[in-house]
Image (cartoon, rainbow, N blue to C red; front, side):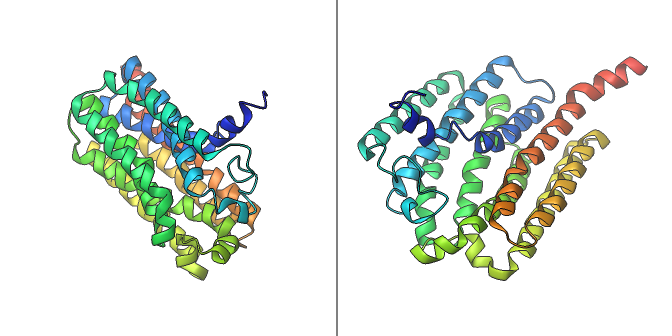
Length: 293
């Protein structure tokens, strides 16, 4: 890769698709729920590109905020700003470009969704600073990552129904759980430099608290399915997610840093399982039932 482009590519985490997929699967699932089936191609394109751009923009603003800290954390010391491969001014300009491209997508959305997008951007911008002020930055990240679900309902239905907020809550609980696993990787370094996180807040109760958050997310997802009158196809996806949560608990049992990161990354499959269950419920199941009549 060109040496000029490489720092920007890594700054936006285009080389690490896990975060994008963690955003994409629930957002697509929300589009399916809001549309009660296959969404329009236009909205699929807008939200897919928007997810990619906003995740990249979030990573850039995070690294700008943490440029003086990342060099003291073993996992992040090779990030472009931390190692001096890119100037802060260029990073800010890159953030403006990503934000500008994302804003062009607002043309295709209704007024309410545009305002929600502005609110979502504000949450994403303040998130990096939360780790300095509170032990709950993961909650703010959960809100930022889940905001696309609210926007998806607004874009399809023109308002935000109860189902959207149930899905938002389930997503937020799930994100706090998996980002706590992520924070467990950096816990020792964060303690040295004064960074706060739920991993530090929970201490030795981290695994128990993650389990409570995961269970709460599953209960909320079940309430969502009941609210929408979904059948066993949806609950099969939720059951697969529950099994993956159990596997993640196994991975983090010794708090090994590598396994904690693996448990975090495994949540991509949780998102896919939920997405697949919803698509099957709303798209494939009616076709299968119709063909059997």
